[in-house]
Image (tube, rainbow, N blue to C red; front, side, top):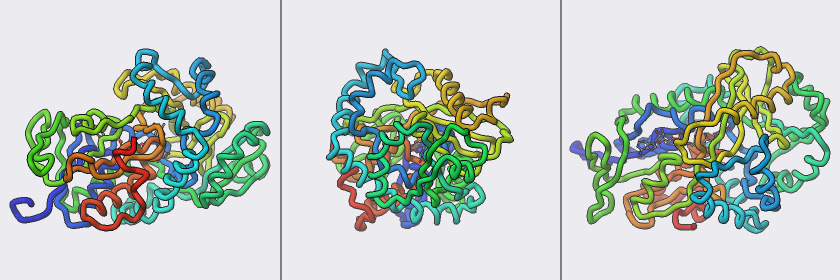
Length: 417
Ligand SMILES: Cc1cc2nc3c(=O)[nH]c(=O)nc-3n(C[C@H](O)[C@H](O)[C@H](O)COP(=O)(O)OP(=O)(O)OC[C@H]3O[C@@H](n4cnc5c(N)ncnc54)[C@H](O)[C@@H]3O)c2cc1C
């Protein structure tokens, strides 16, 4: 309790996930403090592709991945990269990742992801509305594109998995795809369209708007680096930052990929790796684009954004804070230019790298710490942290208030590894 008798909670991390946890705890009457070393949303949540990925139940580890990984690691333009200095650290993660590609695991992981995806909009839309951020949202659909028949056939299982999990997909031929997206390359021969897909035109501004709402409701923002914790008889009693010690009643750890060392200090060893993605913005592009595109062969997504067209992709396994290698932003740029030939003449770009927080089973950790009753974990949302932020916040607030979680949380337990 605070001096005024209010229930209090502290969230570490002000990315999409942390801010949504803070807002949902405020909904339950908590006086909430958010601690972050940066301003809200400036880490991985700033540069993503803005998609609310309701059609993304297939996990990253799919059947047959074991045959593809070695080839991908050595091909210059392939989407998977490993910094060799990081190989030993990442090896146990890769072993677990390969084990997750067994069909029974894939089916279970997809079902678990879908159980969150089913609740995405009912959890996030009220927050977006209250933040007055509807203008940052657009609902213009998504197309998964194919440039050759063999790739289409190879992807059959992933799309069947989507359909079995309730995703509505329309199959289009190349001309039908270009009716939806007239500037798309003639090389596109087929596409699956998800009509009810929405995206934000600016993920950083969206988190900033949600953080403004948090402050307007009386939330406290504390800018500091969290270095450790003090543990008392009832769990964690204080957060140790670079500037002070902050007493806590309820602690939510939502520090993205940087949660791993903090969870370790709290006694939980969790296989969380930085799967670093890159984007290029075609700043001020005049090539018109309606909705979002995901190229199945090229492993990139392209989205129309407020500042131009953004293309993103790549999965570089390296330490989260190692310097970015912007050759990878150029690889995704070339893919966007192949998908939208009108972009070939574009001159002005901005480039970015952000570490996705990824677990081998492609499911976040959402649950109470196995060791400290007043600590909750909310991290590891890999390619879907924007999408899953709202529902994660809702579930964390349900756990903190001892209410029945609106999703079965067994698949997301912190001690499942
Ligand atoms: C290229 C790319 C495209 C993507 N596209 C999409 C998409 O279209 N849709 C989607 O849903 N997701 C997408 N993602 C994934 C999404 O961006 C991430 O899953 C999400 O941003 C993770 O949010 P987070 O709040 O967990 O972490 P972050 O946004 O990284 O926030 C963590 C916060 O914790 C703070 N922090 C960390 N350690 C400490 C410490 N010790 N002390 C104080 N503060 C600390 C950091 O400063 C940071 O603000 C994409 C990612 C990439 C890289």
